[in-house]
Length: 313
Image 1 (cartoon, rainbow, N blue to C red):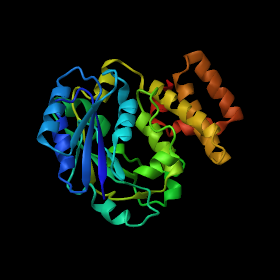
Image 2 (spheres, rainbow, N blue to C red):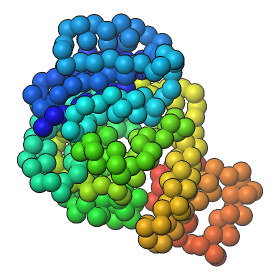
Image 3 (cartoon, rainbow, N blue to C red):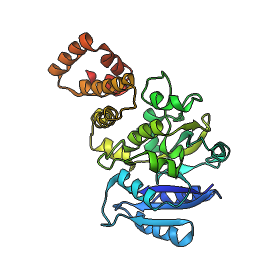
Image 4 (cartoon, rainbow, N blue to C red):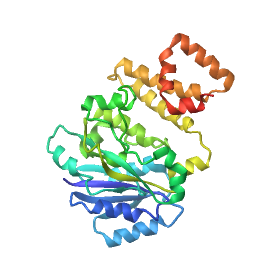
């Protein structure tokens, strides 16, 4: 295996060295591609030091040296990647020693186009743990049992009951198949949830298989200055960003002729459930009354949606 690990770097000077070194522990990692996205801290200098220290580390920036977001930054990394396989790693996260154990066996089968595993949680400070423990706890982000690849796409859409989730940090894919089947790759106009949208489409076009699901293969680093903290400090309503996500997914689904109609309806209802939750009070109850009569599943979709319940009243 020749794995290219793509690391978008933004505001991660304290953590990127750990991320890089966690990837370099594997002989299968052909290269670690750092793409620096005009960080406000000293991350660029740290990345330059890493390229001087390690032959397998390569550093890139956008042509204009500007900030373009995680989607465009990962796309640039994919453009520069030379490995047969692609793995992703956020600059404040890190791999565990078992990260590619399942992949080394599963990818011997040519029909396996991608493998996903479980993500753990590491709090970098007591303050971060105090602030975000209620969100992440010490839980694994994982798919709860092994599923056939055909069930991964509807499972992520909440059509398979308690399916669970997997993180982009725990995904490994065959490079050529991904590039051939997924166009565009990451959508650059989505500043948040572009990785979720990417995983939805990827799981539709590629056959993804379960790797290690019962224990972490990588760790999510939670600290005061990562993306979720920034969003929280700006008082961004999580349901607002989810509306944008589901609008994007719905637009793609409606233009993809091979997606079954029941799945398209479900995606539309997920979008609608968030839009109901965000509507002004008077309009909200009018929408709820309307859909209780004309499309009750839109309301039912929302009932299982934590942000729908949180922002409903």
